Image (tube, rainbow, N blue to C red; front, top):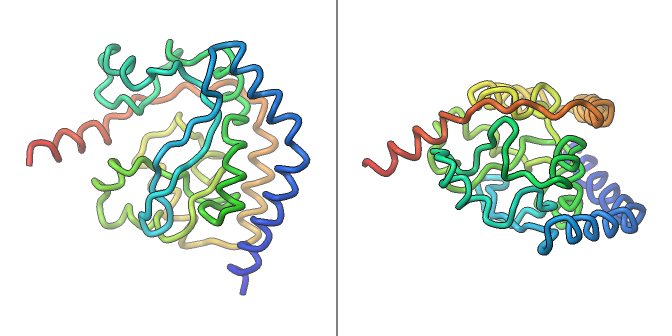
Length: 211
């Protein structure tokens, strides 16, 4: 029954927030256009519940050729982020620091593809290389925010993120969701995180190519 309450509350909250924030969302779109041109929105394929792919929305925070630029920078994992990453735009730096780049995912919540709280949806190619225990994070809908986000986000390695997501899945409750939401809002103005270099996914991708 509590899962039903969560699903209904998610969609109701998403609908209300999209309506209330619509002028603010349009202002962000205009800012991105003026700062770095179109598009303002990105639609990325991510793995949802049970690994089923869906198109996740977010505001664009990097240059338009971010993946190619990542390869030019020598990143083994072009999806990763560097400290002081030169691919991040001026508007994007603010949006990432405040997590406002994730607001379009309210539409994904309204569609039932995401939840307000849950493990962050990973790239489909990276999910293909998950170990069995790591797939626990796919047992629930992915979230706009989650336990790993309030515990460090890009500042913690993937191994720790998997552990935090597994803890969330195994200990889920409406109270835990409420605590995570409160922590998310209280940390919106914190300094931009210093991401750790993502070696795990890069090494796994190499190993998969060598099979």
